[in-house]
Length: 237
Image 1 (cartoon, rainbow, N blue to C red):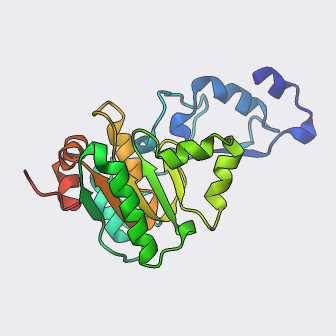
Image 2 (tube, one colour):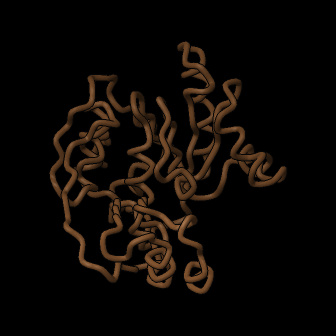
Image 3 (cartoon, rainbow, N blue to C red):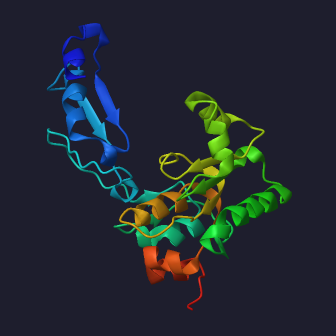
C-alpha cells in the first residue's frame, strides 16, 4: 500500500482524508494514507475515534500530531436510549436527542435469546414499524437468517440493508457505525470475555428511536455493571 501510494500521480492524490472508526485503524496503515496526500504538510487529516467501540485488537495511532476535540453531544439516540448505555461510556454525554419510549428489556436464557428476539421483531411489526426500520443484532452467534443471506456473498448480504421490504439481521461487529430506527439486541455470547463490554455498548447504541434488549439478566449485569442493569430495569436476584 505504501509503495502504491508513493507512485500516485498528483491528480490522484487527496487534499484531505477522513478516517472514521480510527480506534480500529492499524499502525501499518498510516504511512500509505499519509503518502496519498497531495500536500504532506498542509493536507488535512481528520480522525474520528471512539474507544468504547473498539472491536478489533489493533492499537494504532497516527504518526503526526493532531489537535484533539472531545465530541460529547449525543444526537443519534433518544434520551431514553442514550441514558441506558451511559454507564458504558468513559465520559459524560449531553443528551440532545428527542424523547422516545423506554428501553425494553426481555429476560431470557442465552439459548432462548434468538427466539425471543424473533418474537420481539414480530411485535414491532404488529405495532406498525416498517421492516426497513428494524434490525436484529446479535452479540454472539449469528442469527440463522443472517447466515443464510451471507451465503449469497458480501454484496448481496449488504444489499439487504437497503431493502425496504426486509428486516436487517446482523452482528454488532458488522454494524459498528451504522444505525436503525428500532433495534432488537440479542445478547447471546457463550460467556463473558474481554470484549464483551464493547460489544454490548455498540449494540445498545445502534437504535435511534426504540431499543429492545433480550438476554440473561445476570450476564448483562456481570458485563455492564449494576448501574447499567438498573437503567435497563433488571431486578436484583
